[in-house]
Image (cartoon, rainbow, N blue to C red):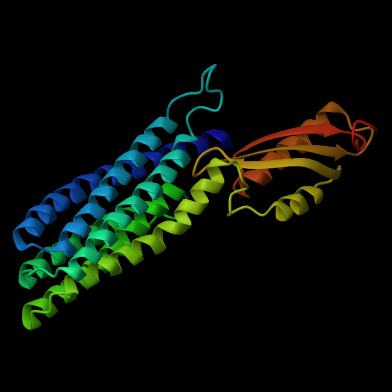
Length: 300
């Protein structure tokens, strides 16, 4: 009954997240079209660079939605763990794509510093104001689940920072409108680039770590060992391996050294108790092997 409740909660969470990604994709796609058209019309690099960034955000949301849908597919003989790992790979791809887009923004901004061009500050401010509303609304969709999954957290951070960047673009547009200073436009582009790098770097490193089966940053191996050793009947634990199955589910294998003379029922109860405890420590899939004495290098 406990497992069914957990699975139902997880399924409900996936449905809510999928709905949030779908709405976010629709809103941001519409805004990208507005920004590109207006950016070309007003000759604004700030709008065009932000549109490029927002387009990469749409791709990010689309890939993340695809990955979440893949996690619903059942395991088979070739993919015995299912397709949960796709969420980690998508997170890594999204981070890399964002950094490539940032490089393009930076290069174009440098060219604009060398060869300044006239932009329309009033138009820039109006469009960026629309961006504040759309990005804020999109970010709010992911607020509740942002600490439960790396892809959701990435979507929330990108959209929230986009809203802040739009605030900066509004300010730049007002300055351009009243002063006519040409270099404000590429300057804002460089600020956008800096903000995106800052927000993306953590996601890139964590995604790379998880793709290499490193211990997730939210899990402390020493805390896991301490909690397990508190269990009656467990003398020691070794060969601990913890890795991420997806951006929201973790797995663990370990060898338990149990007290001697425990019967099969007692061993099964210890395993069941530990698996329940580990679920509360963010480890959803556990495989435990039991021994009655400690073996090292093949010798017991």
